[in-house]
Length: 372
Image 1 (spheres, rainbow, N blue to C red):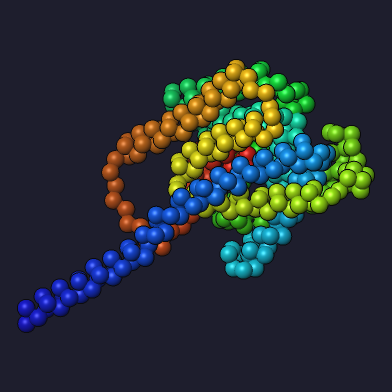
Image 2: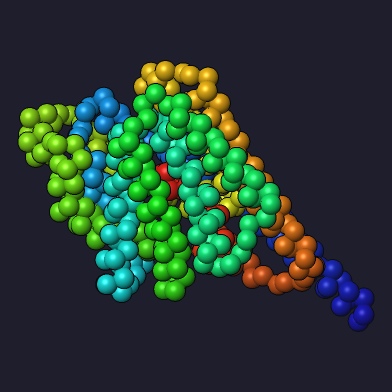
């Protein structure tokens, strides 16, 4: 009898092992190609939308960045509504007053981001976004009392130095562009901080939050956009469109609207399949690609001091990522070893919201630059 029980146990354990092997074989292709595909798609989409938006302003001479932001927001809401209808996520009703208030902050962020892109070179536009890292670090210290480590402070100082050199040596730098860039950076940091709080307090995903926000932000920008554009450019949008609209312009607006949604989707996918740290490194790859292609496609003059400033800023951003990794490992080492039991279904949940209540700088500028 003991032998038969042993045989049954061996048989069951053999079947269990075989089932595990089959499960591993089924999961292995996903684990091998998803991180690569998601990373490549996010890089391509993020780089393309910045360069295509710049083409709309510089080549097609479209004079209305804020109105373009309104179109992007309303198109994004429509597309997300269709995606929700297919069952990808369930729309969530959030407090109306809270969402309207946050929509105004969101609208200021995306509108001035495009105004910054219109009035600045691609290189300065992208490097200026890195100033969100030190700004977010200061805001995080003010709100939580957590002082950054020496390595983080040094990397942020390196970034600031690179931004300063880039600003001084950029031949297209101007007071209007700098002002728009500063407003875009400040409003984006505030938007991200508030977004993390809202999503945590209301237990909603990034897709649900974006869906709730885009309708109101698009509506507000649709009303305010033409007026703000007239103040910024001196051109009436309706008159310009009536006299200058053509197929390339319409195609460009539709393409950038689609890309705006794809930026968010691929960003969430990349964070889920690669992790937050790897996504930050990808952000520096995107920065470099956008800057290099900006010089190539828009024939900006290549000045050695300007290139050195860009390299200093990007190297500082990379150093910042590794400084955060060292801080994270040091914190884990202080906690000591622990044994945790994780449900297999929970292992498959997205990681995008895991840091919403912690370090406010872990999800910075890379995804913010993608709002374009």
